[in-house]
Length: 366
Ligand SMILES: Cc1ncc(C[n+]2csc(CCOP(=O)(O)OP(=O)(O)O)c2C)c(N)n1
Image 1 (tube, rainbow, N blue to C red):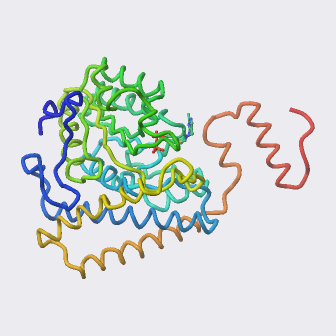
Image 2 (image 1 turned 45 degrees about the vertical axis):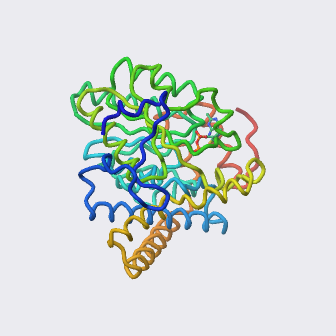
Image 3 (image 1 turned 30 degrees about the vertical axis):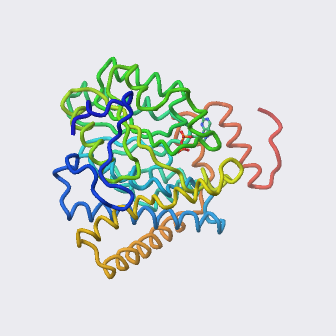
């Protein structure tokens, strides 16, 4: 796929599967996507959907603090992370559970993170994934830094950096993109444009017609892709990774998708968007597209489909149990892993917490 064919200023975006699972972009279909690989990626979408539902269930039952659902963004998660190779880095924001799982982060750890455990960010040594990043957009410059280091070390690796449409309004995003353009860092800016930054719609986020065109100002390509189309996301990210890996510098991908659920479990989207809008989007389910395609190719039987969902329900339950077994938390964890020596104001807060928990009242000095 030639990225230059998809100039965002010309309004063309990458599309391969339509909403009914028909192939509309045959010439763009990635040659390396065998039937077996496609089934594997569909598997991972199902895994993400089930893991997402389980998180919501646990949060509603008071077993998890807060959680940002991924519902509707499965193709954007899986199609992008699937192109990474050994040694590549993945830099998530906070709505990339599927991408993180695909790159080897255990689900129990992701659940632990949302249950409030610092240990939920303690990934296995060989997993090249940064921790979840809640402060909007701050991970983008970390990702560019990783990519720059990899370039200096001649590693030949790629860094895939995720963020939302709202994050494109942060200075962090512009500084990172500018740096990446100047130093030609081997990274992909992967924007999950899910149309909202909490209650702020894309239309009032920026006066630019597209997010992808912002890349043009920094001197590298930006492409729009149908973010609900697994194959299109895969093809675009694969082309971007090939460019970055071969020394061609960064690429910006705007994956146009839709957040079907609330921003987080603390959000009530009915306060800022109409029910009809959500209903209209529900028919464009990224999993349904792939399932219809696989059925049309004779690659999916009802029995296999039932077995797949049951398998993941069991797996997800087991991971949830593991996460809960690692709780309750040690309250010192929120202080202990950031600084070698705690600054005085945090030492005071730690002592304060100890006194409160021990029923000794508030400290008198500090
Ligand atoms: C620096 C900072 N400011 C504000 C917030 C509160 N906040 C959390 S998510 C969010 C919106 C992010 O929107 P977007 O980047 O589009 O990502 P999405 O949540 O849609 O995936 C805001 C404002 C924050 N976490 N960090």
